[in-house]
Length: 164
Image (cartoon, one colour):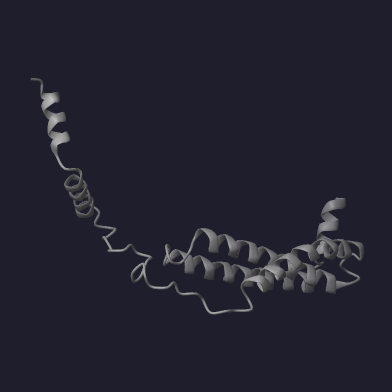
């Protein structure tokens, strides 16, 4: 008999449950950076316990979604109004446009972080990136304020670049 025949027959005679259990135990022994947690790292309790729901909040859900859509829809006429009035005459439009663009961008990037880098899975990276986004948003707001008060303003800069 050939050795491959003996190997195949030995593999077929082994019970599948025992070999699966041995494979799982071997993988657990070799993966020291990811310890085995019974039930998984996310699930808590048993399957018969009810799920926990977050407390109701006006800043999330339908109010949050409605604010995002309203802000997105308002940016088009706000941009047109800011360029028609040219920033130096009405600096209020420059300020509102700058803040609206930054808040719109913050909401978009925050939604990306919520969808793809969830704190349950990325316990350190998720909150770090969220606070980094908040810091960048605050810095951008300060920069837009400084640019609109101490320089020509947002719409004047864009119209100057457009006509150059």
